[in-house]
Image (cartoon, rainbow, N blue to C red; front, side, top):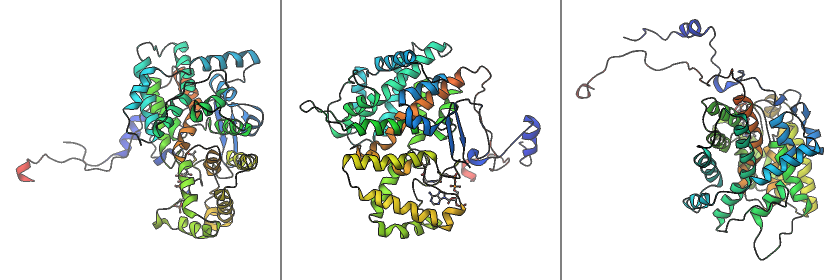
Length: 405
Ligand code: ACO
């Protein structure tokens, strides 16, 4: 016989502590020296550096170095890091065959998840997870190959042949070339395109224990292959409550269709029965402006101005922000635009299709994911992540044979 009643006290007695924290609202799952957020003040620091300063002065690869190694690189260190990343950008030829197995209209996030996971099969035997140098190399490979695989997924989805990485270009230019270059015409990229992409990558690079990073850590805590850990992170990122929000924002703005329909959309978002939320609004940690959203909004205007693009979706987004920020419902709940609210409008202006928006997020967040995986893997005190539960099912009952049920 099992217990007569559910005994939460026993769980407490067994472990010395027991907390029910649905959604991990108030539980720290690890110690980390990578990223700091003060959600009430709207502060975000990578290794102590304010995001505003990094956005203004740094570049994505330098930020990746900072997240992974804890310090900004010297000029020589940066050169060596960039060289190493560049050296690992190629995709194994067999991965092309692997990709060809996907249905022609597969979502690029599905392809990214599958192909990154499959890297475990390519590098598993050579990987000694206990060797710091092997771990570092896995991290470099992931940062290097993610744009190549992302661009290949896009080209496959539109029936274009895959482009090899051009290693005389920097990280963002290389990615844009792999996405858009066609053999007959040189790609004429406006300077603001790679700059805007670099900024978006910096702002999305890390955000402490968000759902996807926590997933990477949880999977990593079992000693799993790093490529499998990152594939799990990609899967978690895909959901519309997390990274998938940037795609959902654009769909929402298109559905609203006109600034004059904004007030009605805001009313609908307040109605819990409607099942509709303002995508790109609200955050688990920020109860103030998301500092990344403020920087992205500014870049959004710059990109549209420099490209000479007039996008009615920007007018709808600005109207939506104005109306929601004055509305008692959003004010009381401290719901502000988050990082995803304006990013989609920039991606759209750069010619990146909506289905690729979350993939763009994944490229950037890879820097954070691998930094957290490396930090955790180097800590000998880390235990396997194993949450408990509050059991709500039947306590104990006797088996009844099928003819008597
Ligand atoms: N629109 C309307 N109401 C909202 C929204 C929204 N976008 N976000 C939260 N609320 C309401 C909730 O209904 C709830 O109301 P209640 O207190 O009356 O029940 C209250 O605000 C608190 O919301 P929760 O869902 O409990 O907050 P949580 O911290 O769990 O969720 C989340 C945060 C998932 C980001 C949520 O705000 C949301 O769904 N936003 C839209 C999706 C989005 O933009 N996601 C991207 C997040 S940033 C990132 O991952 C990169």
